Length: 83
Image (cartoon, rainbow, N blue to C red):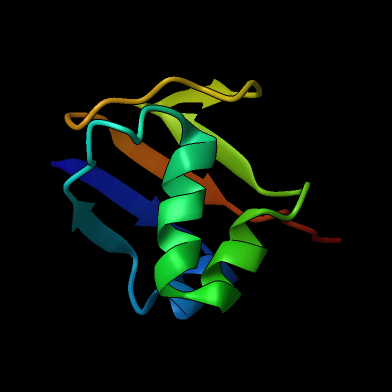
């Protein structure tokens, strides 16, 4: 079962910071995970598809359409601003 982590506004949209999600065999990329989540929650899916959202797989930043498996930790981070 994949562990999904959501930060910032994404945690609010996801209804919490963590979610365990069994990934079907057909879901093997971050994009496919986002599509799966979007099929259940359109607003969360739209937020995860924003270009500013970064994905970290097993504590490594991934700037490509990363390959994932059912045992991975997948974290989604929105853009952060400050002053």
